[in-house]
Amino acid sequence: MRVWLAALLVVMAPVFAVPMVVQEELKLLSEHAVDDMPGGNLSGLTYCNGSMWTVSDRDDEVLYSLDMSKPVWKAVAHHLDIPEVPDSGLPLTLRSMTKASSYVRGGAMDFEGVSCDAKGNRYLVSEGYATVLKVPVDGAPQWLDLPKTLVEEARAKGMLQHFNAIFEGIATNAAGDHLWLAAEREERGLLAIQHDASGWHCDGSCVLNTDTDKTQLPKQLGGKQVSQDYSDLMLYHDKLFTLERATYRICRRTLQTGVIERCWSFADEALQPMRLYDQPYGLTEALVIDDKGAWIGIDNNFGARADGEKRPIVWRFAAPTDGWDAR
Image 1: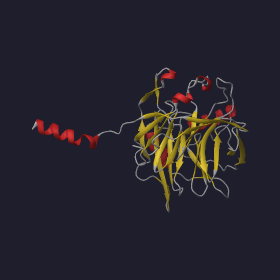
Image 2: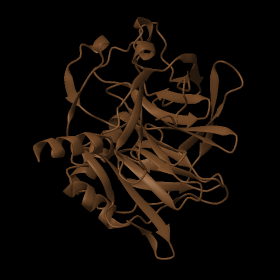
Image 3: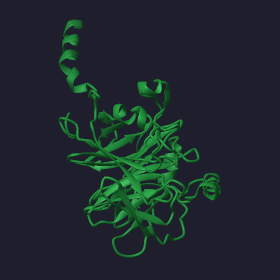
Image 4: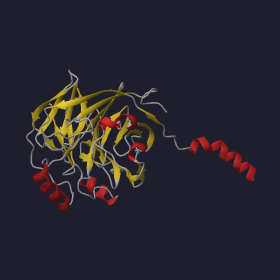
């Protein structure tokens, strides 16, 4: 019996095996400083109908398009008339801390991510108020009527507990009727909502997964253990791609559960001596994936890096050697 059972386990092992997470180092192709973002702090990117768009977490009433025609990009400001912010269910203490901090640093909305549907509508996620602003191609911006269970379930799972650690990334599908949100850290997690004739709601649970584990910083930063985080989110080829700031990597995850399938590191390029910032945490906060590679944006918090550059930076990395879809 024991021999038979052992043989059966050997045969069945591939069925139950966890996919191997391979970390190939991505190759940097170019980097682009961004002019004309007075608030700096580039905190999200999306490519929409032939144009790149970005947000700053210090500018409440501005959405920027990016002129990419020269090596130094130019930000073009588009004014937003923002309506009164709805109550998402985020506790008053956290909302009050956001308002108080805005008097010092600017950015009460604290826009931390932007995504785009096939029609060109943009979706901006507010970390300050845990909600989403839709900026249509034509017409006035409007807050989405998100389900109250979104924040309730997230907090019940340990997410959205701390100031400045709320929603940090957003992704939408082409139809604009599904949204995915990334809770930043302590605890980090992925959430999903959808829209139909009854409005925005969760299909069962709003929470795809949560993550309480620690992670190890790259060897260039000493390799110490820190809390894991998400800093942006992208939907590409029916997979979720997460930008993971602390570990300087991009990970591909399943759409239904958010489980990791594969990761790619950009630490070797990002942590070159001339690109280092004298700040205690990672600064990569914006992600766009396409067939040929990835765009990664830097929120430098007004700080200069080692070579003296003070403007926001966007890096262009080549796609992995076997593509983003490889097993």
